[in-house]
Picture 1 (spheres, rainbow, N blue to C red):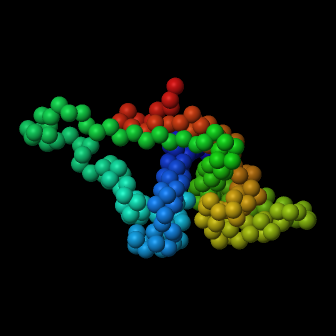
Picture 2 (cartoon, rainbow, N blue to C red; picture 1 turned 135 degrees about the vertical axis):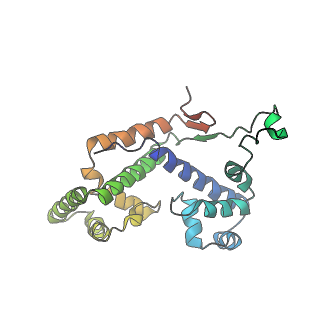
Picture 3 (tube, helix red, strand yellow; picture 1 turned 45 degrees about the vertical axis):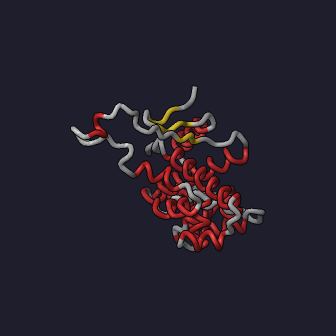
Length: 225
């Protein structure tokens, strides 16, 4: 069983960080969710996904929200020609001006709540990836859940019963959100209970690096010293 991709948690936190900042900027500009969604030409549900850092919406949807907030230029620059060398023989190619430097610092606040939230999301995304690829992993999760349900009364019984529907119907989006219910479901999860130790440790190592901050730029991803 493979250890998770070393960039998976980094990419997840980048979206979470972007979503949080877009939400704060919207509120700072005095825009409600109805007006914001209308201006961006999207539904309130889609706007909620963007502000939650959900990987579901397309990059175009993120850009539409950023455009309404007046900050789309920074992201559009990455997809344009400004960062590319000019064709041979052109004035752009002969220019001695340095290319624009684009750097983004990705980090998680060194608070227990945010670190645990990111860790929980990352562990479940990895567990769901395994569930899709390996039927035996999903079977182990279902067997674990069956044992929990057979154990009798528990404050988590309602959550476990909901997990039955999630596993049977592969309703993964229910546990990957940032809503209170999604967080409660992750806390009562049979998926992470059967996650292989090396996979779990790989995710924890990635989260640990983000606590120091990772700088994305021309030289790749770097952890500040």
